[in-house]
Amino acid sequence: MVKILLIDDNQAVLNFLRILLLQKNKYHVETLQDSTKAFEQLSNNKYDLLLLDMDMPNVTGLDILKYIVKNKLALKTIVLTGVEDIDLAISAMKLGTYDYMLKPIEEEHLIEAIESALNENVLLNKEIDTAQKAVLNGLKYKEAFSSVITIDEKMIKIFHIVEKFAQTDNSVLIWGESGSGKELIAEAIHKISNRRDKKFVAVNAGAFAQELFSSEFFGYDKGAFTGASHDKAGFIEEANGGTLFLDEIGELTLPIQVKLLRVLQEEEFYRLGSTRNIKVDVRIIAATNKNLFDEIKKGNFRKDLFFRLNINSINLPPLRERKGDIELLANYFLKKFNEKFGKQISKISDSVMNYLKSYTFPGNVRELMNIINSAIIVETSNELRKKSLPSYFLENNNSIASLDEEIIPHSLSEIEKEHIIKVLEFTNNNRTKAAEILGISRVNLIAKIKKYNIDHHSAH
Image 1 (tube, rainbow, N blue to C red):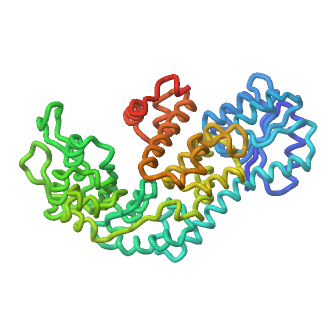
Image 2 (cartoon, rainbow, N blue to C red):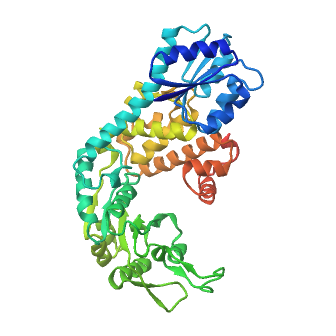
């Protein structure tokens, strides 16, 4: 049953609203007259909807709305007020209020607003769940694919292939552009495999300086180099018995490729600074956004390593070839980031959805996720509007199809830079909070701030 909380300092109003809602026989209703207890009440209970008076002593409705946003509480709020105050209404809307009504309340109007607020939550969840169930029907290991949001036929065929590949212990090579979901497919393979109870370790070969990669990947013994004050196990040891996902395999230098080949052939390796060989039982899933055939011709990638990795091969389509997934994914990310930021943005406007559907997404699903994430942070109404979209996206939307390949990587770094600036603004330049929202370490964020030359002023 839907749980509704009413907060108002007037007991007569609470009684009236409670009786009105209970007559509908579909709401569980709780009331609170003392607003000083609101924070405690909201943190200790999960509600679907809050009906909130604005003008209360000690703790005001605005204080409560700020608390909801700060603590990322996922509930819809309808404000009820006896004072026609435009500034207050704007403040309430900026804090994610779904609707704003003047007292005396029109019963029919209130019930309609409640139904509308609740149904948008239900519909959004229902659409995504129904689509997912339809897609996963016919798969033996449905749970393994629950994080891949799709209704695309090509992706469904890939799921069936993944189920077969996962049953073996063969290496798998996943081909696909950046942001197309290669790691999610690798995780699905691990979840289905006999190694599912062991570790899944994901490593991005392109994220490390090459001189660091060897020590991080294979580990090192104390004294192997300056600063090696203790023995350290590498990624490959950490994944022993489980699965090692190696993304951007095309970035590995030739000397490291030789060592990786040894791991695949002999199932052993040496830590840096050690003469003792370590036996390891690990399944390697590799991924690439490069054309490895071209890299082999150029002499940048070993043919023997390629054949060792490419025993089973999966090609992931880019998002521009999965047009039917754009609306589904956009709504999925809307729901996800609403919950994360305690926002109550109930829908994506038609004009925004049209923009999304006409875009080619050089950064694929990851780019779509960042666009929705960024827009939710700055949106002040209960609908995601065009003006909240990142400026690079609006500028490039009509011309992106004609961009040549040399320009696209530049546009991707612009995407990341703009997104980082938006998140820093949202957190008032708190780098720890920003790193948490971005899903990267604080050190990684600081490195990106330096890389993109984002100074203190551009994050305000």
